Length: 225
Image (cartoon, rainbow, N blue to C red; front, side, top):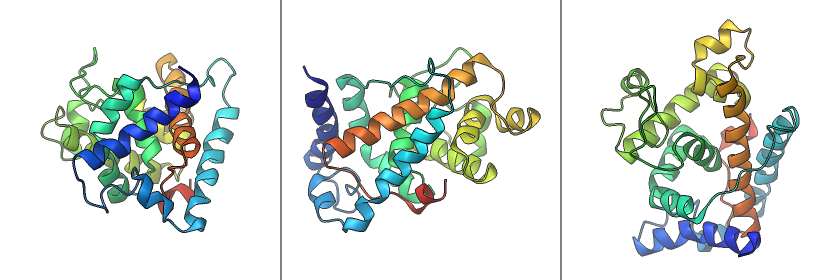
């Protein structure tokens, strides 16, 4: 199967899922091809701006870490099943859909029952303390996990003034470690690999939507980071 066909199928997973579940027009906005076609041209032009910010950040990474990340059809189907929750969190906390997907893919491979060796749980791998801090009572519940994880990501983006690299580093290693090392990505191998990994998945999601001509408008946040 060619990469182009695979990308189209992945993008279609979102729209097809929402149509089959008869999700409301508003809820399906970021994934429904019909709605996207009706978007004002200026909103469609915002996507390259976010894409360029991701690309610029990736250019600062060592070549060995800046490799692209492919998304399997299995992962696409999993993401599609959480599409309404991802869209809701994106709107609620003003975080790009693709960035949320990037974190989910890097953290758990879109497996909602995932548990790490250190006890992080669910799609966005929330530690018990973080889950409690952001109002999550059941980290295995996709809706709660995505809401709590995105809320934390939004908090980190605000704290580090829109710097995606530092926000992602904080998500992985904790904001205190980012501050401890002078507001830089901590010298932990896991974190050093984590940040470019999320960005690579995020760029892949952007490319998939764009290649399928199904790119939703970005939240205002995307123009600030």
